Image (cartoon, rainbow, N blue to C red; front, top):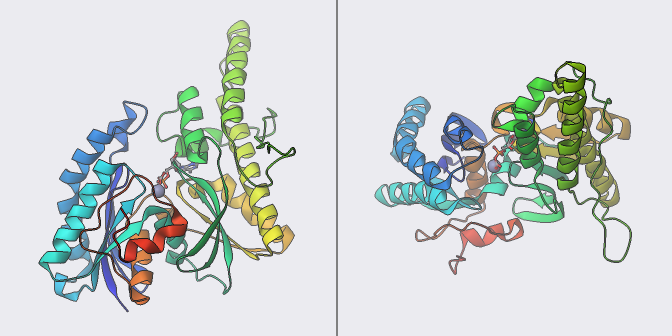
Length: 355
Ligand code: KG4
Ligand code: ZN
């Protein structure tokens, strides 16, 4: 079984991991969130600088924890797309330099393929194709997986990603950044059916609605109006904003939309296993709603382990390991790109150089 040192620096987490046989021998993440929180979002220049500072120590740490030396590795991997270019470059240049220095193959990994592979860090999946709901700060997508590298996107968000909606609504409720965990905490004990909120359907030019695509911008606007109205009422009555009920109602409608459209897509596609990955997959309400719905419908489901939902390098290592087992690796001069279709992820491991 190959052993891979993997790096992840696509956004605001610097991460390194040593992975063997789909298991992390060591995995470490240095988050920069607090620093970006002051600005209410990720500042690309700061992100790159922090990756430069954090990576050497993270690499030393995971190598030491794994008990391995560079001579024991079969490859070195780093996320090369999509993400912030300056941030991606830090991981990519570091990984390529180490690979060259130690005479090892380099693998440039697609960040979303990494998220897809995070599910393999948990319980084994049943055989057969499956449908992945990938929900993160940058993406909300339904992806059919017919095997490693065989991906087709069946739905996407037309505007905000689900995680982005959590972050924006958390800011509106003054709960801080990142918004997902803050909303989840604030929603505990809240009444989830107190405020009816829109489910954001996407109209088709031919009439009717797209069966699975997501839209969260209308929900965000509805929350802005609702919070303003509730604030007025609270001020008039001399009470405070019902934050727990607002957070719970928002969390509930997002979870319902995601689960309903995923189940419908799975049914239409004849797929019997659903997989939940990405930062928002850490959400307890979403996980329990998906579990309940799958039980009713007789579908199987798996989610990435909680520790590997948000960005990490272990998932990048698993993706690299799959590719290495299939006999592929990337060109040492492979650069980085802010965007690249997941369906074309295999091009990262061949010639000509795709970027
Ligand atoms: O996958 P990730 O770490 O980064 C991207 O690739 O985007 O996802 C980060 C997103 C953030 O928007 C964050 O608010 C959201 O995941 N998130 C959550 C939870 N934990 C993180 N959203 C809802 N509930 C959570 N528990
Ligand atoms: Zn991510």
